[in-house]
Image (tube, rainbow, N blue to C red; front, side, top):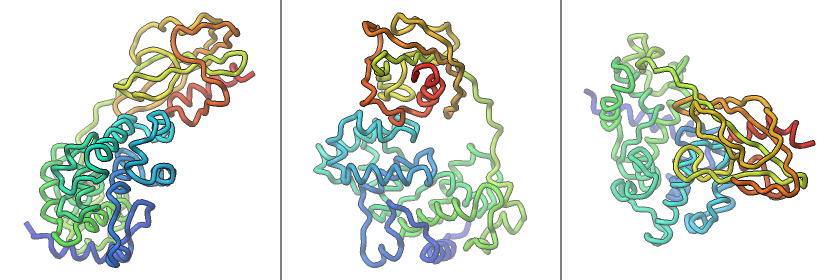
Length: 351
């Protein structure tokens, strides 16, 4: 197995010329001039980027950092405000852990993130990948950052034929071999950039790749076939119900979902568990009409929600949820599946 030094030099030379510009990134020129990344911004970006694209995160990151420019400001924020800003990014447990982590750092650690992988791992919501990313990018420690882009680059570079996910441990070990002691933060970001822009899942642009001369899959003509993947089991489909109600004065009936589980802590419509079961009792007595179905796909399953709508009398006494005045309600604060239910119901409740 090669020592990886030549590959690292070639990749860093490429990164110095072609690094992507991102609102959370300290570019190679700035870094060479002595600018150090802010651990808060590195941490926030890494949490946002989990299971999400760079394009989707940019505007969220700008809004978050404009509203909460440091970890102390975020720690002092109201939970509902943070969850509302997060709406649409998905994987809402990340937002809950974001607040928990910010409060630990602000209250227990004097506003300073730990500067070791082990220290970072003790914080809420920070697992092996995120800890390595913060350690490498924010503190320039020789930690190896392995995400899907890195796995793809390594699988092709070393022609690892074993299918994913079983090959993940081997790919991680090979990535460690490539990580240099000098500039590990820039190297981690270079690997991510290479996988996102050149060594892409389909039609990799090998002629533009700084590692083309080292790539054994390219030499064998099998680069587009790697990494191989084991067949995926089909996603199951679950069903549920959402009750969308509006009072005569324009207020909407909403409730906060339980802290645990999908969409935990988010505002949503009263409804059912997402399982094959009869419709639960409505949250309030009213003339409920069916407004159709909405569909949404989560990581592990498809969801079909039957949307029921009603206009509520002035003296309505809901058994579940709270009537939120129209002036304090914004559909944009709802998670995506709840916005879909809102859109399905509007024709019947906006009149």
